[in-house]
Amino acid sequence: MAPLPPGSTIGIVGGGQLGRMLATAAARLGYRTIVLEPQGDCPAAQLCNRQIVAAYDDAFALAELARDSDVVTYEFENVPVEAANMLVADVPVLPPPAALEVSQDRLAEKNFLNGIGLSTAPFRRVDSGDELAAALAGFDGNGVLKKRRLGYDGKGQRLFRNAAPVEAANAFAQMGGVSLILEGFVSFEREISVVAARGADGALAAFDSAENVHRDGILRTSTVPARIPAKTAQAAREAAFAILQALDYVGVIGVEFFVLADGSVLVNEIAPRVHNSGHWTEAACAVSQFEQHIRAIAGLPLGDPRRHSDCVM
Ligand code: AMP
Image (tube, rainbow, N blue to C red; front, side, top):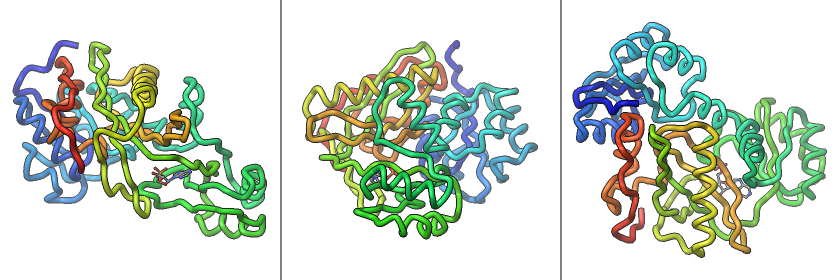
């Protein structure tokens, strides 16, 4: 892919804070941006060249975005896959929509990760109270029950410790009767994330692992450097690279890990976008995750991800 010349237009689906920071990075590199976002005067509106105010799956709006953009990207993983496929017919969409499919469904995500040889928490598909009871029994009554779709920041989750089977039928109903997965409870030592990128030329780059602390399912702090041995950092980086290559990915990805007491890592989840645990790169690296993402999807060489300072976000 030839680099997009300055003055080209990047379409962004989603106009929240991440869209705002992507639009800013694009402007610094000389690109124009159009944001598709149903909420008028959204966070990105102030910093993009144009906002199309319409639903993410509005066919006319998507056609307009495709017509007026040289490449389209997105700032959140719940962009409807049908919308991404509609766009792809007319304009390059990066990261590729396959990354959306994998990350929108926790079951597909776990199967994908294990399929490329990465380790995750053990998991069971759960589509009824009986299946939940059986799955819980298999994990000795301990586990984290999660909605397969549309859960984030710990929403749509329930923790079980030494649960009796009778809890299962109620729990399934309380989660709304939707398709779920039960994960075995992981006694992790800490949580880290890797924000990594793959360029249009296949080049790979990763920012340093951040150590993340969540409270009530929400990220509270990210600290770099993470308190992990070099071999753990390397394993996490290599896992992120394997994911990028398997998806033929172009752009920035966020990969969250559990670090176990022996220093090994399990992949928790992937986000096919710039990541909330990567904001520190704006302050502590020459090239931020936002510029890195724009560079990748515009076909520019990736920037050097080296960290020049320690950082707490
Ligand atoms: P998630 O939305 O899947 O990232 O989960 C939110 C947070 O819940 C994670 O960052 C962990 O702190 C915790 N958590 C999720 N899954 C598990 C698990 N299988 N075992 C232990 N803790 C978990």
